[in-house]
Length: 372
Image (cartoon, rainbow, N blue to C red; front, side):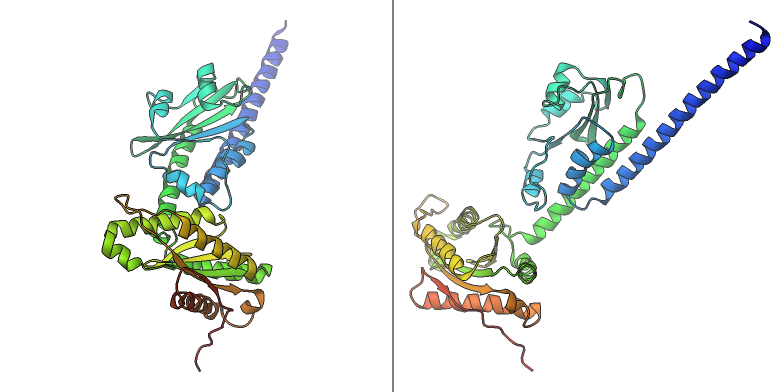
């Protein structure tokens, strides 16, 4: 081969290598850009449910992964309770909540990421329903030195993740995910505490007022009626006087649980004050509202309530009901309507208590107009 031919061959090989390097550089730039966009989207998620939905579904499609699984250490069911209260998402395929950190410490004895081939034990732990996974990136989620979870990325490409290469961008992703999860849990927990009655775990009065506004707007928008209910435990003071306040507290907790078990998930339940509960029944006309509340009254009467020492206590309740319909929402401002609903239900409740208690009373909504 002549010198010119040899130089030409070397030039061709050099151009090919430069072209390959340039292509890889473009791929890396696109990948980093995609990860940067994903990071911004993670940081913009406002709720834990939204964050998990993005990670387990949208992120997987965005980066063409076969599977993503997420394990979170949740010893006190904090995450579970937050997700139970989510309106938008009820199921997260790929999410596992752990009561103990044992499985996490088995995966990450050195608390460092793993990138490489998938052995049968990793497949069973991280991708139990995905036998086609050939390579994976297992990322420990760490906050303040504590292992709080694991993010597992699975691919059917055996070369996608290789233990001989560095994947700094996925390690950075793990740090961002851990911060986002911790922030979402903290933020929603604070919001939950501000809206939940600490004794009964139902809505407090402030949160009920906000929910009532939302349901009135829904009534106006959908033209479906909404029942507003006030329930008062009969002769509750003697319960405290005779059996003690610990028994009284237990009765209130048990009453809240009974209401939750006998109403729909879409209904709102609040401790309105003392031994009084407020309930909203969206999409519920008068006849159905009376039927539902009469059933509640009967269930309460037939339930064997007990005090904190197991002493049997007979409990009954008086219930007042009124209905908000679409035409009511068109007659005045919302604050006037909320006050009218509560006052009318309270008047119906008062009639029931005055006439012997342990009964349901309905009263048509009487709008309260501000004095001029």
